[in-house]
Length: 167
Image (cartoon, rainbow, N blue to C red; front, side, top):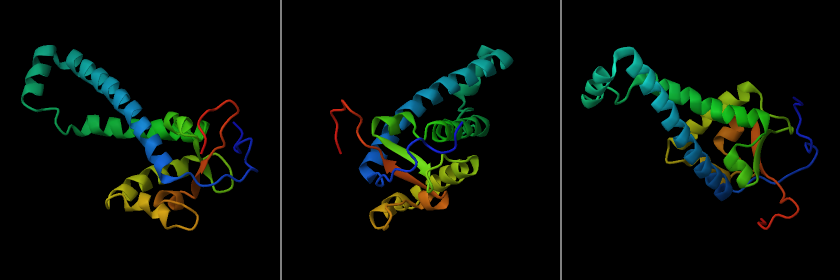
């Protein structure tokens, strides 16, 4: 895999906040579906190990509320969902729809360390009422906190020929 995007020499503007949020919404729908599948598989495996009756009793008693093992699986799965797309394409499926791409400041694909910093930084950015995201509205380069932490930027890609949506 080439570490530079084919159009790395092009200078694209920072993607506006509304496009980033729209892409996040699309990706959240995909993630929720993925979490449902993963949780179903997890419960099927647990049911096969402990038995269906025990599984139902455990569920009725709230035994799966705040399950740290399942929570860890979903957290790791979420990281790899984003990291895979960021590293391979520079875009999640939601980012593709809204024509935004994540790249290193120098136009390279993100490295694993950048993916980790970006993912964890995005969680930190969301904590104080999303201040780390809103920060881009005042930043001279249009960067969020996690853009800065991970030495990356989210750019707006040009419309392709035949695309009806502009801007």
